[in-house]
Image (cartoon, rainbow, N blue to C red; front, side, top):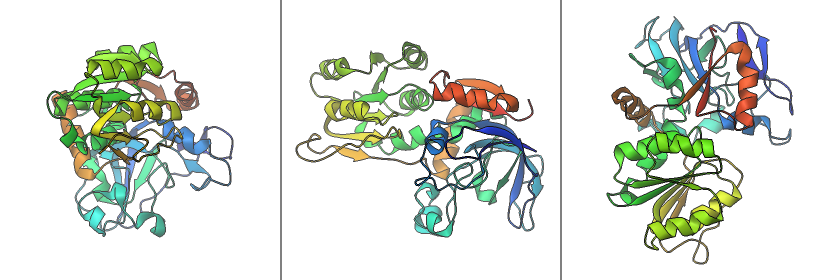
Length: 346
């Protein structure tokens, strides 16, 4: 089968031929119908050798959807032909976190060598994908896999961050979204769907600010020094009750620090390398700073339910397998509108 792999430290992705995997006991094989690309893939590929810990060669792709193709011994609950999406942050399945569906916070996974697909385990950017357990499959129903696959991360991650901040976002509150790209443009829609907040979107790209308006932002601002004063002005000097930083770079974290309100919350979702100091002489009294990771299985089901109602959608650029390297180049250059999705059959 063909797959998109990272094979050499310091090099980019490659399209290669590899053996088609067979499911072992308890495993499920999917014929992949769609696989999403993510900036975190480039984060992994940009790591120096001494920091890289994902194994080589690595089949990329932690956003996956497919049709059940083969079942390992002992598998029940799904049937060949079922259309499913893959819940990515795999845990041990036995601890307190996993028991409540929060496998994204499993404390045992790393020690047991359990890794998400595309981030240690072979990923979805291939014609076939092995999923370790049926609990990591969620029915897609009549949802289009190409339109929906990015919800496995670009939908779930902002949803998780926003749900954990709901107490800060009653009617009349203000939420700031920094970065209106792949995750941010979905975060804006989630905020509009489940909160009463006024949504202010920031970006350095006019095209992404246009996208932010299209998907429901009440206000859009350039992500620069002027944004702080503008947000303070529109909130009567109070600031934003919640700031969702989908970039995570030092300049955007500084905007987050200076715009969050007293007793507000900053959610650092992006992995742009910034660090935000907190304390009496940095962040406002009562403000919390959180670095959320992915989301729970229950939250993933809720995101798909929002998509079914039309409340949330992902702007998608579609590519064939042979175009995957170019798709990654465009992603790295900031040229993708929304998310890039590879369709292996094309």
